[in-house]
Amino acid sequence: MLQQAVQLLQKVYGYSNFRTGQEDIIWDILHKRDTVGIMPTGGGKSICYQIPALMLPGTTIVISPLISLMKDQVDALHSLGVSATYINSSLSQAETEERLRLASNGEYKLLYVAPERLDSPRFQSLTYRVEVPLIAIDEAHCLSQWGHDFRPSYLSIVPFLRQIPDRPVVAAFTATATEEVTRDIVKLLGMDRPEIHVTGFNRENLSLSVLRGVNKTEYVLNHIHHHPDQAGIIYASTRKEVDELCRLLERKGVAAGKYHAGMSDEERKQSQEAFLYDEVKVMVATNAFGMGIDKSNVRYVIHYNMPKNMEAYYQEAGRAGRDGEPGECVLLFSAQDIQTQKFLIEQSVSDAERKSNDYKKLQTMIDYCYTQQCLRSYILDYFGEEAASPSCDNCSSCKNEGELVDITVEASKIFSCVWRMKERFGATLVAQVLKGSRNKRVTQFGLDRLPTYGIMNSMTEKEISDLIHKLIAERYLAMSEGQYPVVRLLPKAAEVLKGNEKVLHKVPKAPKAAADAGPLF
Ligand code: ADP
Ligand code: ZN
Image (tube, rainbow, N blue to C red; front, side):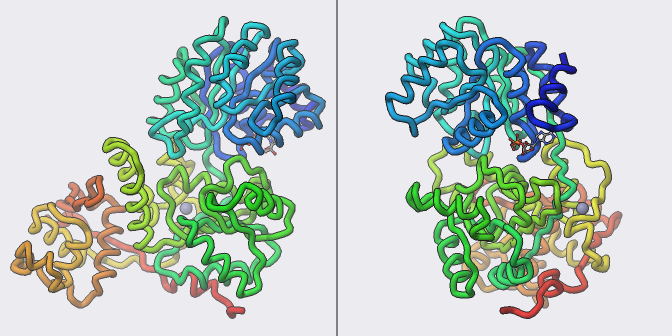
């Protein structure tokens, strides 16, 4: 059976070998096993269900959230000589009818639909007339409340599956599921002893870096200035920030596309196409841009702000280097980004449980921005994959040639202050106490009477707070969840206080941005 799959891969797609994971997923689907395929963006998910669709009798239904993506996929299949179509809200009533009619005659091997369509009785009745051996669900994390992009319309899949006379094999695909989300997908879809494949999150061609405390606009201008021929995406958290950055680039003579949810469909489409066809090299966008966009030659993705969690970050950053050539992923971090993300969580309509989960994920993202660990191994750990080596030599942690400095004394001061404050306050207040601030909250709680009050007054409050965050990322301290998290001591800190362990910290010789900086325009 696999031999036939390989032949199709070669004959239809013109590729010589399967990529890691594809073969196993195809094998499972062909053996009628429900499957979850977790693969990074660009990993080649489509082939995992398209090849079985070609081999199985009847029509495979593909559920996909994006209208533009469906059209692209179907066009691509047509060019390969495969009979496929899509049904979504972009079609007229007559076109929809015609496609449904042809579908009921079994004319298509693949039929792409948006999840909303599954509620329609007319569409449902199709499954009584044609054989549906396989349902493939793209972007399956949209099913889960715990995912970063929950879409209520995805829940229509559940009753839809239930009403199909012969339950088809169900294959769910996503780039970003954590264990929690995977469990949710399996449960909601009522999957029967599913095979779960997590493959290849490591993208060796991507270099990863986090830069803290750099002048962000200067960095972006410099980067574009030094890579004028490269296509790149700059992600910012808010529409306002996107607008401002675009204006700034324009003033500096950089033609940039713009994309956010506040623009009209038409504007967004034009902007997206200009970028896809290399008419503009730089795209400045919120996270509204990108899902399903297949532009292979994006050379860099700069995050102007820290995103809300690791899934979102890696999915966005992963849009660089999809062609396998080097891609650069840079996250420009400032402490203000934490406030923005907390604000967004508070503004959301989610319930308390969801919010607490969002805070937990945010903390993991913040830790990424402060960690000294290899960033690649940090990401792989997060997605439950083992890193081949603890150091990748292609991330800002591994390339940090700084000196190891013993900061045991400073760290101990922080730990004892947290202890004296009875582990009841947040990082900002701890930093203020150590600095000896006269802030009202400090005096109000009588914290100015603590023996640790003012014992780090030679550092700025920001430096102290930065250090606290680094100690959190290195697991000496923990931050509780919630809007007003408190800092607690972890066992590692106790060892330091007892004098059993030292705290070493790498201090870069020169900030990376300054090293990179050439002349500005
Ligand atoms: P995803 O949906 O996982 O983001 P796609 O299915 O769009 O990824 O595949 C990404 C790119 O990789 C596409 O251009 C696809 O044609 C290519 N690709 C997929 N499988 C293979 C393979 N086995 N060999 C070579 N290229 C492949
Ligand atoms: Zn590394």
